[in-house]
Image (cartoon, rainbow, N blue to C red; front, side, top):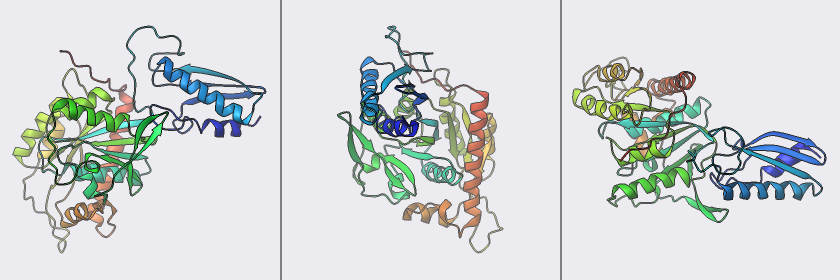
Length: 371
């Protein structure tokens, strides 16, 4: 019996929760072969009996198709509840719908028009350029910008059945898996939805999308503090938030309110830092000149109030607007080195702050709101 052939057989088994194969999703631990016995541990995000049974039978079938004489012993455990997966104890299980995503980063702002979606898109591509596996969830249901900014307008995601249940396949741009309301709603269509329906859309994009294994899932939130923000922190463990503001006082006042939502006792999501967008204007013909059209200091003030850091200051330049409109984000433009470096420095700071946050703190708890 060859270990590689058994691993290859197990790679054909799909996790019905995530749509990923169990090898890629790192669910198989302690795989051991002592012919004719094959034993391993399956690390599960949920201890549901039907779920365990589905995976057990699928693993047995996959291995027996390669080695019919094998005696397959599958142990199941959920580290979140401590130990082996036995019969249900009757207590509530806190399921992680994205066990193969290491960090979920919310990109938030107090008001619209500050360039939050521009930051989310370029941050995602920046982290990817630094070597991370990154996905983008455009959860700004009222004004989804990702399709335009990534050149995906008019495209529709495909649906694939996993164990008889439909799952959504994200679209890809520049190697980045992307999901957005803009893929399922016509560009001119007004989105008029009440809270429960909004919550359903956000959960569907999280729980029913076949996200690949990721180091970062960047979530572009709508401006303000509303149903989408609440649904996100109730559905997944958010690693941290990146706040976006412009330098002027009126933007700062709204950004502080949005930031304070993450500090609520029932939420407690760490703020990794602040990105100050449109920090200064630099003419293309005078790259060394800086004109502070919207004032100065807003990003530093917000970072100080959140006890975090200023992650980056992004200049107001024509190429950023052009890149967003043309579907070629500014960070990819190697002819605009100053702008590109600003985005890459921001991505490096986010990666560094995320690593520090994970070293110093445990995972964020999903929110359970009290009536």
